Image (cartoon, rainbow, N blue to C red; front, side, top):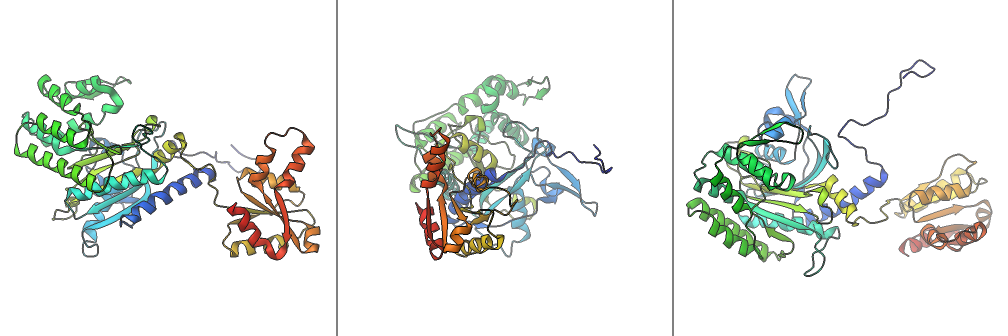
Length: 488
């Protein structure tokens, strides 16, 4: 469109699959990130960052067929083929190879940043989203996998999620080992690794497309809801029955699942090694005090990315099943070898921040008041702005986050206080001309005022109730009085 001056106006809109974050959403995200970082650092992880854009060759092929299709491909000013990172794990593998002399192994890092996938947008599914990753490189022991799983559980508890015997069950971490399915397939005569990966990608769809569709995809394939054909693995009926029976194994405890899995696998070196790894992981989780309520072993868990080589993990919130998994990860011992001629074992987990925040909101776990600003300085029309600035500066110097209303001088005190209420601020400092002359200042508890007036219909009573929650103090007592009110 063109405005009267002849300039073309641009329609304000976000790209499909992307989103803006307004203050309330950012406050919730920052609160969750603060909890996550505290847990990460308690376990000895240190923070790093990498560019959002990588050479295409670094990313292509690492996550599998589907991930290749979802890459945002670009060209650098020098004509190089590049792409936006689709996760934070591949850049970490590149970092380990590039700085091998500076990053002494074993190395624990955490990384929080945006990733990009040219996927079909949908509810809770965006083309840019934030991941919060923890990874350990240089340690092949399942003890490290156990620590990563313990981190996932501690993050859940840090944001207020609990599991109680006979009571609440607010989160669950599912764990499996890809080597178990590999051992099953080798024992069934399926030796091709690409076929193994295809089978794992199909099994990973179990929660989304149901058992019958998984059976079809393991066989000749199927037609999806949109009418598009989905290529099948081409397994025979007996092998498919064996896979489906295996992924249906359950048990009352992690050890019981390991025993059942051991009985279901063919006797082979691969089977024995895979079972020993899972049994060792169960022992390490017990040593860390990780509850059977928090973490279960589930042979149906596959995880879709091709680079996983051992234990894999995924977390869900039963109170928000529509959000899907909110955390996931696993061991990827071969990924660093893509960038250097040495094997570097590695494992880690990723938290999908956007999905996690959404799920916590649906479960009622986000605090009602998340504003970082605590005070707004407002005034009557007869007060000079410099007086407001003096008050705001004094509060800020005392470490109190303070906003100050500097706007239309005709805006009445009531509208200024309404603005403070709309921003969910707990306290207002009112600078009035009379009070200035007397050396006093008024402090208003906005939360208490709202509470006292919430059921009042009469206008005069409503006005009087609002004044009950405010006090007038000597000007020199400003900071102490505000701090006292905030503590209350």
